[in-house]
Image (cartoon, rainbow, N blue to C red; front, side, top):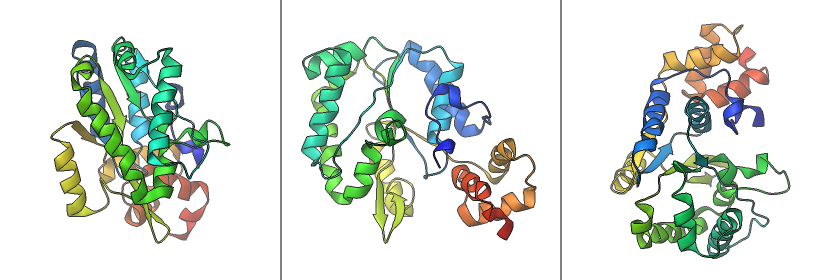
Length: 254
């Protein structure tokens, strides 16, 4: 359900300030005084990565570049998506080369690669974003991320003047069920995150059961705690899934 996906700062009025949020808030607050930071914000699907990001931005006075990527064809190759991504940035920023992109975005406190790039189908139902393309292409999408990583290595000098915050998930489907490679595969996910820690700062969004109860009750004040705990037992501490369950009235089954 789209109403539980936070798309911008103005959508996050009922936010609960959890430990994960405070980590993001402190990181964002430090961006004014330091450049060259690459931060990956990860979390199991349904934990509200967007809500945490945009709620922190709502509080802080930061000049953020938050680009949008619209894809037309689910069968686009990794090379085509890579070209479309940088072409979009060049047009949006009014420059002609990738080198000029890095110079331009250095003027901002940070570049945010989040919902407008990953889930742009919620902005235009006739288009789709990078997450849906990745999910539908599975392993065939990995060359795109390898290309982006090579671009990062090639321009590390230019990027020392830029802060980049990325809402990150590597979604794949197995027998029709969505999984995130960074959070849902136990030891394998830990290995992926360990390797990525070499190059990036990583903040993981997660909640305790107590925090999850607070988040749910903020939006569903009439639902009793026992019912919420039953939902947590079914879905884990993933507020968006519990919101959708309660909205559909399925919580009455517990």
